Image (cartoon, rainbow over all chains, first blue to last red; front, side, top):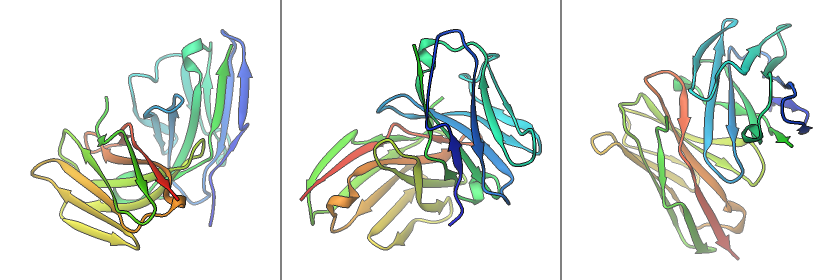
Length: 115
Length: 110
């Protein structure tokens, strides 16, 4: 079965540094998402992306966050100046149609640790 | 803001028993989905139930939906140790994107 792949699996950074988390969604999917999960806690929606623009974002997704689909295959999440509280597992997901009619396919996540 | 809320937060049962997890939500929905997460891994889709459906089955899984009570339940019958995981419900938020609850951590003891 096709998979969503995320790199790196672990990322350690210093507070204030920029990080870019990378995702390769399933090739024929049109909708892309980022979620995050602080250890053992709820899965929080960050942003959804369709047709090369953000379609929805949560209150977590402030000016420090941005997303991009630079080359038609990768989907990236950038955090400009990381904070300690950004430490979490970040999940990328994709779907062939908006989620309401189709399930989401999730990657295995990137564990971000901000020191 | 959060949409689905699972109950209980944690559930521990013996292998062979049935496990029931509940989900409540606040706004009207088009669909509700259940996902499973093994420790430290991504979420895996289990089942989707549409707002005009009341019950759906998939193998040992049975999902019900009561839109009048804004609630859903996931029943796993004849549980196995391999069913140990966290289970999340997800609903559309303002008819847009999917929001998850905090999950139910299920432990099935052999």
